[in-house]
Length: 96
Image (cartoon, rainbow, N blue to C red; front, side, top):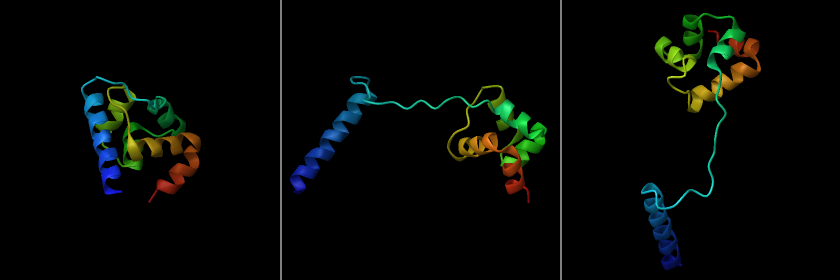
């Protein structure tokens, strides 16, 4: 059993190396739709400063997202999606 597992792990490592070198393509890819951060903030009727404070990011980060110089990822992206779906509830939940 250990030999089979080792061979599977080794095959996986070789595949990752080939993929990293551009020798093979990934079998699947995920594309996340672009978030319109400016429109999401607009729905809250908050200024950039207020919105940045509300969601816990630096003002410059929010500005970069709105100007599409950077993209929100991970928890920030999830939080923005929640705000987009229900701005009023999100604001109420996030206010201290």
